[in-house]
Length: 206
Image (cartoon, rainbow, N blue to C red; front, side):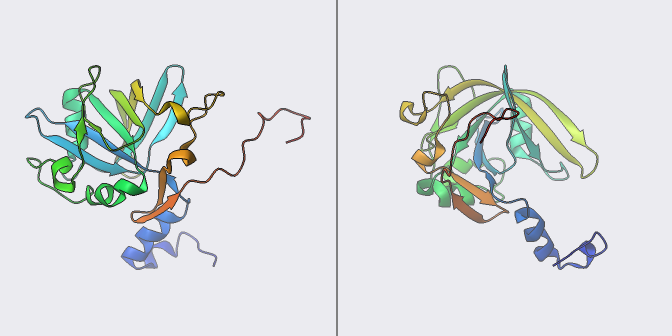
């Protein structure tokens, strides 16, 4: 199949959505936890988290257009904190269901059966059942004119991760805890380490 830009508008709507969502391949999968100013705990499933830098450590993610209320974004802006929580098979069904359009006064944690967890050093709720929990402080967001989305940046201020999955090199070995990835909106994959190669240098064999 060879497609060009003139073919894209002719695709059936849901076919086009699924095609372009899965085209880049599996992506990271995270539950983002926030808390509203009235105390309601919010949870949303995101697949656009990217590493920005390690010194200091920052992560970013894409927020869809604010043409409808985005509880995650509004809570995060109001409270200044949010959490990223990895997903494994034991909580997959609940994580997937968290994407449903619940009213702002209803907690997705309660609705899908996941447990909010708070540390002493962070204001936003973690997912207790998640094996890797990352606490972030909201830093900034950037409007992307091309499709009316926002790129949101957070600074990592806390990490909760099992000691057993951290290699001596510092690598976090997600395959040891069956962290899942996702392609599109509904197709999930297990991680499986294929290899760990040396840092590439000119003239050095891989």
